[in-house]
Length: 74
Image (cartoon, rainbow, N blue to C red; front, side, top):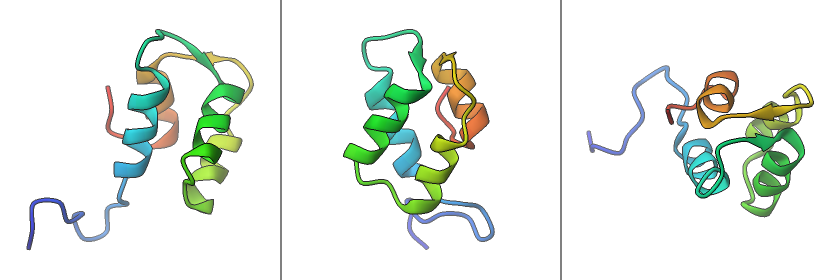
């Protein structure tokens, strides 16, 4: 098993973590629409895009977005 393999039964959140790192690079809070636009531009898989699209309208910190989307960034 390699270090970058996901744990059996656990979703691979690397793409989501990379997205959140990029979106929040120079900002403390970002609205749902901005996160979604970045997700589309990054070519996230449909299941991850659906998670981002399901976020309620509003602004999020990286911790809040990660918690709601199931990422590991914090």
